[in-house]
Length: 145
Image (cartoon, rainbow, N blue to C red; front, top):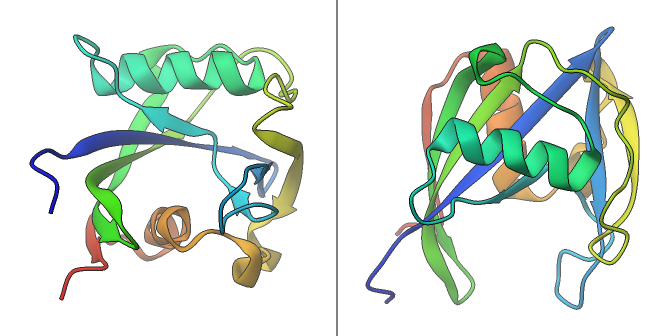
């Protein structure tokens, strides 16, 4: 088992009842599946600063940290990956129109109605945070025995 835990930040952008998802591109089992804009916390960076940075780097929107609302924390381990803590933030406001700024990591972006998400095509880890927003669960664990 790994001797450290990574910290991931995930950003939920919701506009007019639609959630923005990105279609992951890669050479692993997640290729072609939907995900939230997300990334790893860097050394010396706060979680909200990481969420702001990732949103700017991945989808080109600017978020004021005060517009981020923490909605869920997930403790995740699985399939040979390092254990991680995922922090999920809903952006209550942002400036700019989302665009795919990482075509090497993302096939594209799409808005989905919250009532008709492609749940079977969303990676399970971010789906936990998406479901938590609707259900109010502030914590979950995935992959632990």
